[in-house]
Length: 526
Image (cartoon, rainbow, N blue to C red):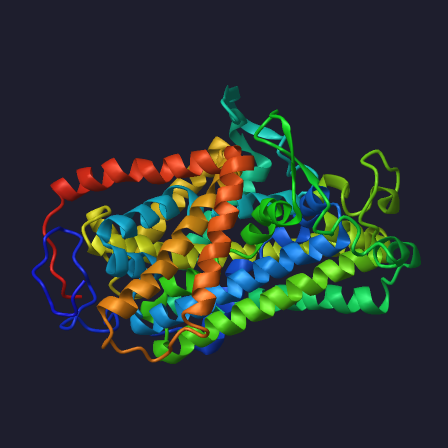
């Protein structure tokens, strides 16, 4: 791709070229460094850190490998964020990663990312996190439950397709999904009233949930030290099953044969939970058109936000090991007997606080998770709408989605379209399966975007780069190798997580060409 301006050949016109403005002029610049950093952190911290360590523990069967799984996730997340910082400072436009893929690899790749984001990644995550909010609200109001139906349409039976099982979900409105719908609708409407309003809510809830995680760590150090757990997890047992010669059992697909794999492969398999828990850090790039001094604040917010969250995540897992034994029995009668592996409904953090403070600890954790999920939904709602807005500006989404509110300068139509589809996913019950499918696709797009960093260094060597990726080219290349290894392992051993996501992405190709053929030509002027 030349640095010279060329006449557009498709409706998906570049909005970033020598004659195009470097920033979006139509938005209100309402996000400073604090708000941008809080958006990074708030989008990352949902319910995952409180839950997924149980599943990771069952897979790796080792205290050292549990920590290693989070360290690998942390390394990859921070390296990716530092690499994205260069792209964000270079192209501070609404749409973020969609824009980077469009500019580096072409409009098809940008569209496939936006298509998958709308269909699954962003909306499915919002739905799942919203339902998690309802689930923990049910701790205080038992009538809020997935089994308390208001309208039950039908139950989709389980449909086995090769290594996958589709269906097996209820379709309708229960009190738990109603809470999720109300939260999504409320926050979608609130975010119409200016980016500063959404950022204000984000800052409050992100600060609160980060403080809650920090409080969990401090309480675990000062109060939660449990001698039986320390002996079980650290006294000669920390490196249990972590040797290079140790083989770990992995079930291939759903109901498939058992394969025996090495330590690197089992760590790659275990990344599904930790990577998902640390995902959505890139959402701040979607809002780049509204960030003040983006060439400084975008890279800095990515580094500060991901670094802080990963440090909290790793510290929380040390606290889990400090309070509860890793190993336990699913039939255990007490919290200690069940351990981390078999914590009730995988709610490890709840088990840890209950062990420290009794029943009050469980209630305290329910409040903390509600705060975390509410803030997470707000960040995802705020950021996601900017991507569909950017796609519509390029003629690759519904035309009205490119319109901003005349007073508040927010993408009101995009917020409403996102809200409607998310509410549909809440009612369909499909969000859980969708989330199982997306981590493979998410990694593919991260790899493609970082490849785009290399491409743009070659094709636009003279472009202004206020920040250059730390460790380039070594660290971005290491990320690409690690992410591709994880994707290959998931393709081989967890096809139920990979092929559906890949199919969703590939379905976007005919949609792109159909949309492209009927879309009007658009100008590259903002």
